[in-house]
Image (tube, rainbow, N blue to C red; front, side, top):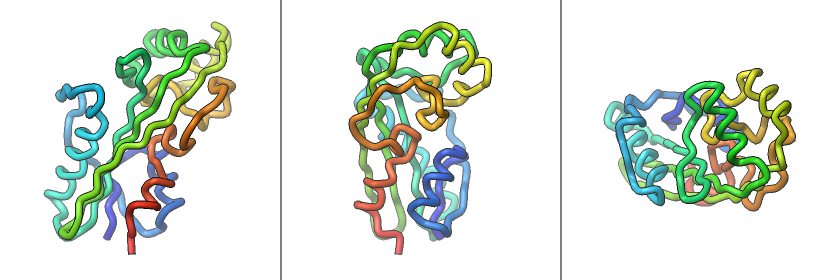
Length: 180
């Protein structure tokens, strides 16, 4: 059985594009207790999540993923509160940043670790739009304080995978993992 080591509703939705039969298990790690180099942050967390779940289900295959937003050589985490979300969205307004999603696939026969990068350019955001977006709760729990799928005019353009920005690089996963 394939296990998706994530409780993210977005990852669950995206995973259904790849394979219909899987189950969800939450990785029991505290992401905030780790500090990795910016270039390996998402890949190290993906590995930790995968290994933690695999340790509990060693007869299954496990796929774990971690996504980070990087702007100006700094990781932009999930906002702490609405004030922080407003700060982040103002910071990203009219600028380019990139999204890294790393995934680890592991079972008794193989381990695959990959990272996918997508470049995102934001529109110039006005205060009214930012406040409305944040007040609707759309920033909560999202790296970079936004979801590309939220049907708001935040993103001007992307170079790379849309699904990667949502949190699971489905195209790359399909290319490198055979779930059969």
